Length: 166
Image (tube, rainbow, N blue to C red; front, side, top):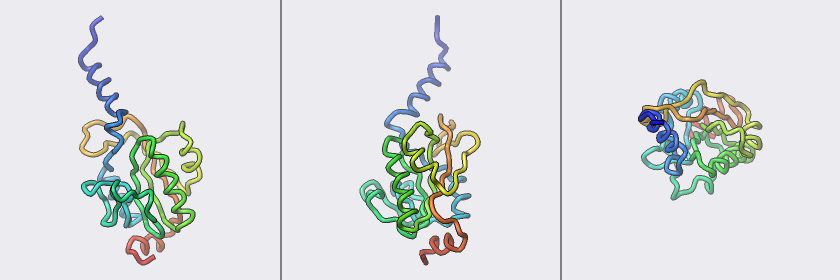
């Protein structure tokens, strides 16, 4: 039986989405703009200089997992590899212990420990309908996504955090 070329191509694209080469998914600009209009982010803790969405940001060299996010309004789109759980735990604890407001863009991974330990304890979650297109990709991601909020969402606090006044 001869395989169709399109089937092989789809399979190869699908495999590439789960390879270790593609654990960084650039945030869709329209989604970030919508969230930033509401929360006024002032820290992007897990990015490169090229993908930073906030003036204040941490690159892998600065290791955002080791930095304080205290009293910041944080947007976090962590790597979608095994270390993603470390970022979710950090977001949870920075909100609970250090007064940060953290919005995470995450893959829906209900089969992971971090999802049950932290995401289910979040102040708010919003499953994204459909699949996002990350970066300049023409194709949608092979997984669903969720927006997770850790920390207080009182409007005035968010505005003060966003301006660096809190």
